[in-house]
Image (cartoon, rainbow, N blue to C red):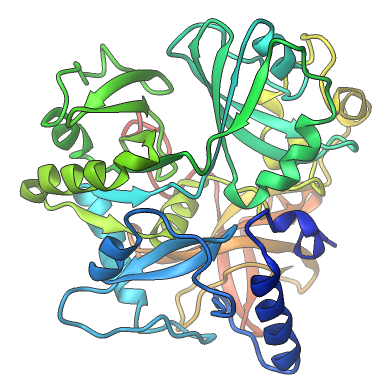
Length: 434
């Protein structure tokens, strides 16, 4: 059983006495209440807001809580009064999320990713130190970015990061925001050399993901840098100016579409946000929230920490084993992984297309073979507005992974599901690398 929901590390220094009291009273007074999928609780909020909180609120943002931060889940269209209601079936905001997905896939969208955790590592020996923590090889050439898993003491997935080399022994890491304090345990396991600094930049920096087929056109209007594919390929980074603002730009996107992550100092957040929206207006840009991002990453087949990636699953079950470099010196979890890396996987992470209904599989729904054998569990899911079907990422027991058809219990009713052998959206990755 995943115990993270009881782990004190899900709270940071921001969880003061007032917040703790409000949450404790809320939990006690609602102990017999029915809780719904995607439910957000108001107790103790708002706790932490970034500079554009009021601007996003005026744009119709409906917020959720992410490691204390108020983070936009979706944006209510102007002139409408749709609230963030909850239930087992699709809610009134569902179509609004669909429009955000459609805009990004067909034109361009702007996602606030400031809730991602960010860390800066620098100083003589910084690369060597970080190489002892993560399982992939840390990039040592400025402008290169890699994906790097973090292994648990049992060899499972404890985290996953984007690591970018900014210069000699100078690195920037981006990871799960809700796991920032949890991951500190791993960073503290390896003694850090005297000349190496490690600093969380989550409060000091903010970020946006500009994504969609017209993302390059929008960004080109705000910078003098050559954004062509020949000059700036996927998984590469540059430190550039966007609308005169210093930005660390990574050509990556959790949406699976063409895009850039743009990270900057917190004091420039509003200016960068307004500049991107203004430049994107002729291209039909829309702000896009976290619920749309959930749909977009699932139809691409991207896993998320705490859902698909957890210490409970082995790397060869999560599909991350190719990122683990056993030929490099000792790193956290290496010995444990060495004992299990040749084991056949117990489960396989797959993507399922589910027969449409008035509700979507969102996580923890049981999966059965067509003969009724329990064989897996949904890790996360949502409706794919791009492909017009409910999708789910799920772990299927390995002995059933060659089956093509299953049943997923959505609200207790078995719904036929088809196993997809490739991602529902852009399986070749051509759009991501366009």
